[in-house]
Image (cartoon, rainbow, N blue to C red):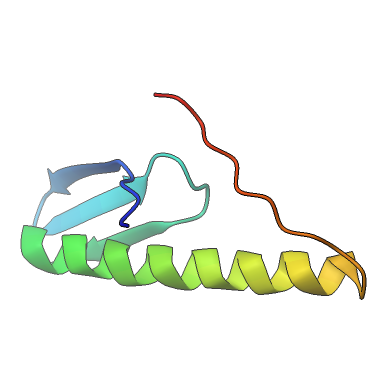
Length: 72
């Protein structure tokens, strides 16, 4: 199941720049809109995986994981 995020994008001069609204620090800049969207996807995936690994490392040995749904 894919989770959707919101990309805020705009063209500024010769560059396309964008941010992922829900995840601070995920932002990119590319020459084309399509390249920007792909860079945002890759960067978002990497940020989520990094945050996941960091959370597990911080939790130590005994922890549980719970899914949390956030209504729109």
